[in-house]
Length: 402
Image (cartoon, rainbow, N blue to C red):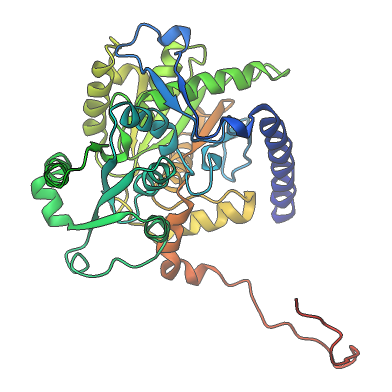
């Protein structure tokens, strides 16, 4: 079984490398960091308001390849879209939203960007990097525990990147965050910076507002175009993605519904309950005058487990086993929980998934693993000191160290 999984992993890696070569040839790097007028897909042209411009921040289109995840029902094909490849410092799904949000910030002549999230927020890291590219200051409001809110937050994972590129970090305890709310906190900081002569632009949690939703409306068009280029007639029955703030699932669900994909979207919630997200997504759809009901276009499953950014030992072991079997490294907060939830759903009801062609969208977040090293240490037993027999010849200076 182990040998079979390794063989499948090598096949997936070969497919991935070929896809990357095709994509790199199709996406000229000269387009990176350029602002351009935006033209929506024809099937989304009735939405309002339409974005006027977009900034090229992501490395697109991101590859799609087969993913032979262990535990799939008989006849089920799983594919993966690698939105963890949208860039390095800018990696993940947040970048697609920022292409529209940063263009709006520049249009409004902002000199500062404010956003908010958890202490290991991928969105806050991506926003900081994008802002810095565009010569905008960044102020981050980061939620942490009450015990840590008064001290240096450290340099682990996303925090290292944020602080390297010069973000202004404002810590808030989870208790204060809960009683005040993200909108009031960002408004208070905006007012303070305005009094200092700044012109701040506020981006909500996860970049998830109606404007940010266009990032994954556009991703739906990208998937359509990738499928058109294939010669095997591949068509997806289902799309699976993690849900943390709602903007990604609103965009991909609406895009699949309106466009040619027509795949059923399954969102796995990693924080709030499904009812909350159905209502939140409905607000985003109404903000675009989409005229559709969120419950008609997406099925939301609860995958939060112990809570946001908290993991069980079973979830972390799943990440390790998945990486060993397929070479795809999932993050512990978003895609890891979504994939774990998907396999659990398939185990409970395999008949509903048999014979389906499913696209899983990997939304990135690799840096979040660094915050879990202590919890994952016991899973990493594959090491030993190399034992070199005395019979192996030795001569001082033979092994050069560069």
